[in-house]
Image 1: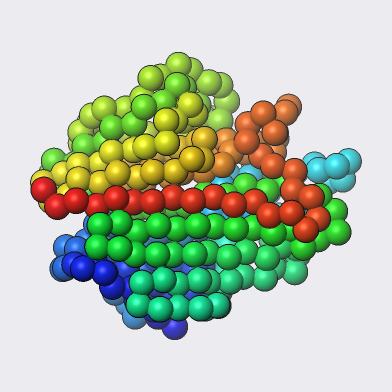
Image 2: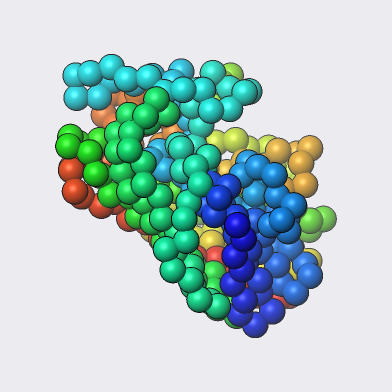
Length: 280
């Protein structure tokens, strides 16, 4: 089940059945995000971008306490003791509506061993000749309040002259399993990707991340307050992920102070991001 949007020289391809994922984003034949033709994409983890909901990053040791009750979640990746990235990226989404430049995807979750609370979600994508935009909504369809967070996990192509500029206030250090442990001051990042080795959550992000290489000048824009930056030196990609809460916020003494929302029955949490694209 594939779908594509076209605008000017841009092409945005999807695999709704693989976690509502973006399979690829190209300017003519050149990939902007890590891109695979949708028919060849085998897993959402190899996609160009996928949604993070109802939480982002890691849920520590697959368990949590909420409103006086203990819950567990199933392992959803083989290489971590934690649950990762929520459940939306591993569930099939359906096409709600589509056109040449817009796509709406839907997901209804009844509550199960992966996430105990029922919710409904929507993804809205639009494409123009200079940008693409994504909007994510999560509505609590359970009868009780539930913890909720949102975000996106885009994978950018790392090129010889790739450079990242982000203004921030602080970086969270992590333990060996990538759970945050303490906050340290860091005004941001301004460096070539070849010199970076991050797998950290940043806060105090100013809402814009600039990415430039020999082919493109990109600007990622979102009002979400946290940014996860993942720059593995041995990989040909890197990730700049706008998210609504700190990783593992549900285990913090004050989850709300770290961005996690207590979503009332019938209430909706919403987020937006935009990627502005210019050829250099």
